[in-house]
Picture (cartoon, protein in one colour):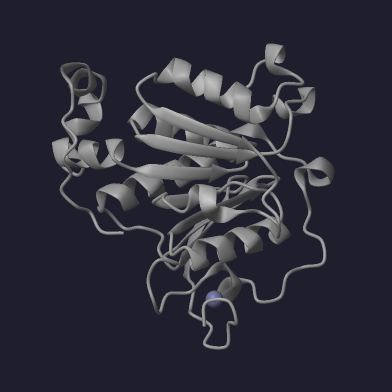
Length: 255
Ligand SMILES: [Zn+2]
């Protein structure tokens, strides 16, 4: 996706609400219009999806689609910052939508209580501009990669475990760029999950916030985007690395 001029006219209220980001030359009025005109899908409303959705909603993304098939439980509350004790047993998509609209009632939020698996009908996300993968397992991430490729929608993906995280942007809307399967051609039989390995909320908060930040940069077309790069985050040792992801010419997913 390329930054473009939009026809959205910001209201006085919006100019005031988004003033602190509009004064950034990288965003400006045109960038704010682009954000207001953007449609973003967030898949997974766990530790990564909550901060990503929060910052995108508050930045004024025009339309969001939230996909998740889980309900809020007590053990989510150490990191899933959209949810409160009173949300326990509610569907995450419903509780998240309610909270996000409290933050910003000017945006449009669609939700679907659904598992993204092989049977997922991607028709509901075809018109969206960016997919953010906030899910927690390799299998779902590969399905989302395929959905992103077949619909030519850029994919921003993140993962977090223990004190570590990863973020990458895959321009699956373009030719000759690597996809998620170029990075992980062989999937591990089982990846650790936070259920048995553990996770701290500040780590998911950091990684989820980065996902929102890359999304805003991609929409407004500025800065050094983690496009075809893997950003490796170790928050125990404060060690950060960026490695280039090469296109695998033999990748059967992105050809
Ligand atoms: Zn590939």
